[in-house]
View 1 (spheres, helix red, strand yellow):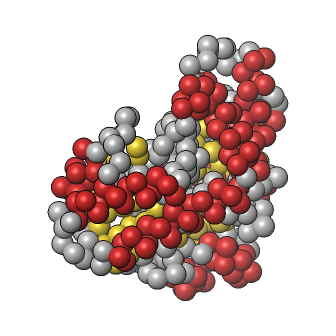
View 2: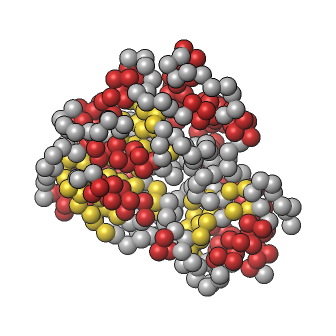
Amino acid sequence: MPGIVTPPRLYIPGPTEVAADVLAAQTQPLVGHRSTEFTDLFYRVAGKLKPLLLTEQHVYIATCSGSGLQEAAVRNGIKPGRKVLHPVNGAFSERWHQVAVGNGCEAVRVDLPWGQPIRLEDLDPHLAAGGFDAVALVHNETSTGVMSDIGSIAAQVRQRYPDVLLMVDAVSSAGGVRIPFDEWELDLLLTSSQKCLALPPGLAFAAVSDRFLARAREVPFRGWYFDLLLLEKYFSDGRTTPATPAISLLYAADRQFDRMLAEGLEARWARHAQGMQLTHAWAHKHGFTLFPEPGYESPTITCIRNNRDVDVAVMVKHAKARGLVIGNGYGKLKGQTFRIAHMGELTPAQMEELFVVLDEFLS
């Protein structure tokens, strides 16, 4: 049996494991956020962000969680009197709808069974009725382990409803799977630092199209902190950000993005997919079933149905006592499911170490 890992190794869907040298990068001395040293750091990180998000368009760095950029999306992308469509198939697509409602948007909610992916037929009757400025799609639903086919949806929405913006939450998938922003002609993609990018929490990143910025110019009240046109002005003028950013986290991002690009994106995606395959095999070996609809399982996080009626809380506690941390089900799925991440820096060998500990519990 593996020895106790110190500190605990994280197999939860965020925050994820952070490499020691990336953590250490945060200890560099602070500099002024209007200094030449910081300007060089900021644009160096932004330059590496573009290949990671597979875009040549605009990228932004925000000091917030991914939920902050959910707010930025609806504040900048929806004109007064127009609507945003929210298919809800899990806790985080539900949150995005709540964010839109909280910002006074006319947010049309389409409830889907949790565990089911989003499909065009879920959107089409609503978009066909007209009045929509955008559709808000969660690519990888962290609460259920379901990954929707956003590429196919985007192509069909583009063809049928060319004026509708495509806004995508990729918080638990960007950097973990291939999401070609430019190829899919997305308008906004948001993610955060603490999942597949394997950074400490506190930063969020976005790729944004020219089309989205053009729409933002038609929106009269975009707020201030999340006004993308203000972020664009500062970015394009060489002034980095309007407000003080998380400088220490950007040192970590600079180091981590180098590590990711050195490993190679395709190699990284393949490692996550291998972790998924190992996790699926372990689950099936022990008689568990997977929560997502077959064919839509996430390569970065596996949600396992508790069809064996084990005490999930006790299993989580057993693993944690041995220095390995897995996730209970999220929200209403607590106790009914459990979640094992295989994203970020986790390796196949580390996945096997976890399974030895879980085998011990199940035996």
